[in-house]
Image (cartoon, rainbow, N blue to C red; front, side):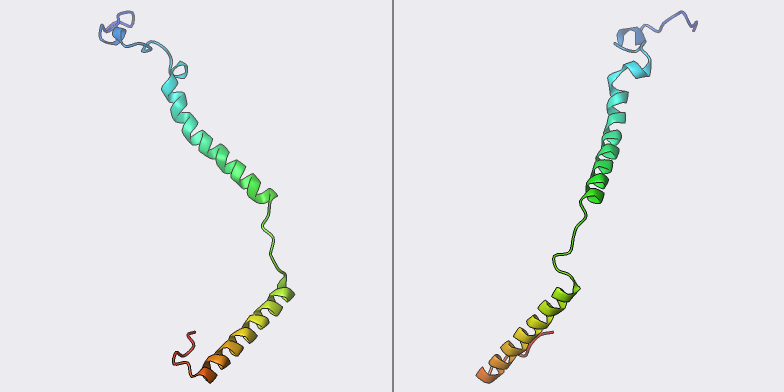
Length: 90
């Protein structure tokens, strides 16, 4: 086929003679992963700019933990005095 001759079947398809960058679907397909990359950078920026802080520091955690342990032992002692049949689960 000569380069000046066109196939009669392709002449009926709209947009067939246009280059790829002037068509819609290649840009749509490129936009999907590009939007995911942009969203990941936005998520990374949000994570770095808003770090998660601890609710309590180490000393307060130790105090809370010891207080909880004391409450558990008091509760176990009360259940043992009542004659509780269930042993404490670990």
